[in-house]
Length: 110
Length: 113
Image 1 (spheres, each protein chain N blue to C red):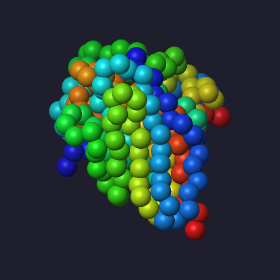
Image 2: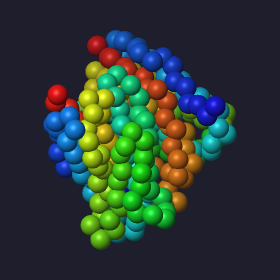
Image 3: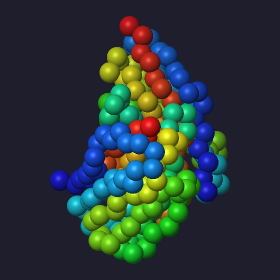
């Protein structure tokens, strides 16, 4: 079954404490991306990756890092989280005509 | 980059009434078009998509959308609302040969009994 998994699903943390949200796909897709969802703003792309070791900024990359060491994994790293990064995060794995979204990670930074 | 506008952040309909959610995009070149639904505390589910071919697209749960190139629109409709349709709906577009999705701000649908 085609699947994108994210962990953790829920996370409450404090300002400045580094965290990583993992994302994994089983479809051998080259393109993966991260989005954040905020009320009234829809989903906005944070970072994307066209292939292993190839990553680039999306529309709202400030405060985030990513890595793509393996094709299946695309972790999102917040090295010093701040309250304005409280949001719902989605990982996606895509072809040109189809996107597969993970279940989402709800992050609260206090 | 694509710009997507969803008219109306909240829509309230009576059960059994027509649901109409509006979506306009900015590109002059017809893109790929998508509608997603998000039920409370859940992830995104694809309702329907247009890539090529017939401009009237049928999706799941009785929804359909029509691509109108001249109006740069992709409005979503359902003839008869059900209580289970209460959710947030997102229109999204991607340019041809581009993986990136640009989303609208979303429309929350409330269904009145």
